[in-house]
Image (cartoon, rainbow, N blue to C red; front, side, top):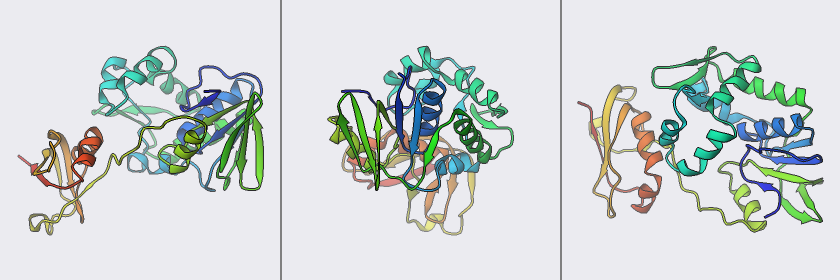
Length: 278
């Protein structure tokens, strides 16, 4: 494939125009990196409000990285999938400690909590969003909101990106569209074969009289597993658990959904969820 980058950590950027598709954290970081390395950079985002997931992440506090003092080999084990693929880039291109230094250079002071998550000392995700916005502005990134990329075509040695009534020629394109279906469609149209996504990091909807009246209850250490599935169920997970109005959430439930996303999809999200609170 030509210079279509499906990840935001471009090691180098040639002179010319770079169009970044997607206004999330990875899109902003890719655009900042490209602009700082001399490329005319345009960031196109389908909505008028970029970085929404940054603002919502970590309960509104935005956990930016994991403990940068940990070895990369240990950090990658905390990823549900893609451990082998990210180990090399984390080691030789840009790792958690590089990310820490980057944010601190942008004026964001960080703190590491007991579980290894790293947050801004303000405990406010707006701090992180503002740092990304300001860095993009200072680097000269041109942001286009309400500009969903509809097509990306190969044009000579580069690409032609169309967004509604506008079109941009580019020497390189970065797709930083996250889980948005449109991003997968754009990649597929360019000849890539994306792996079919499935839900991950979700709470469980549970209908049980046992949970009635317990919404808001938090257990610091619980064991959660799925039983009774038609196919082989995923193994249990442990961690803090939260009872909600709809069922179960919290790190233990989210970890089960993340690390065993494919297995849960295979069993049709049906079965008996067992929570051991002792």
